[in-house]
Length: 253
Image 1 (spheres, rainbow, N blue to C red):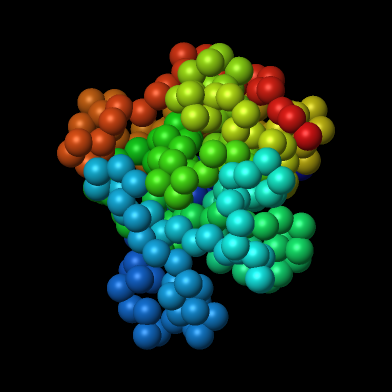
Image 2 (cartoon, rainbow, N blue to C red):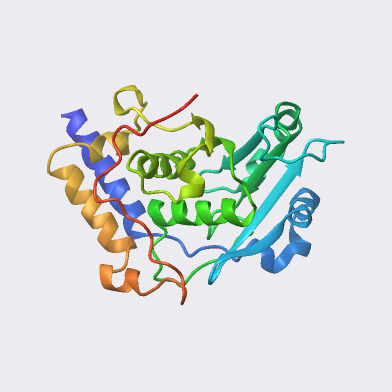
């Protein structure tokens, strides 16, 4: 009996979270003077690039001290970081000195709608496929031609999407051949049988109830498909969307 009570309470809590989404806070870049010195320094070290029409992305590259070589050379080690949800490249600030001890260049950026990057229209769908498209655009804009990729949390899903496209030959040539030197996933449930799922996540896997809650959340938080397709900035390319769900992406270590 108590288990049923707990389950009902968990479902009620999940519904409350899905139906009561708070308004997003004011963009941090709008009030830089109110940010901590560390955040201001991080912002000053990076730059905003329009990697696709209407997509303004905060990027930051850091080179090993006293090194000025070509990061794409065979003897160089270049690291590309993909941050998770709901954070930004600032997550890596304390790890950066140690990362530069093992790599010649570290490339970071904030996903669109995160950190210091710009936001898109209110009805825009921030899907994993779209984040993958922007990731490729950032790497291209920064001249990255080969790298060791490390992803965290939601970034794991973005990187898995890229590797799935790679395994199907869907990436542009510059990313399809010899781009990924190694791939590392951190803090992500890549293998469902080994993941430590929270109660709400276990509920979502239940027959009937799980799909119903997922549909409710999607219908409440996402616009109709017709509005998603028209909400991207003018001139932006249509995102690549593989028709199948990634199951076993090819990885190199």
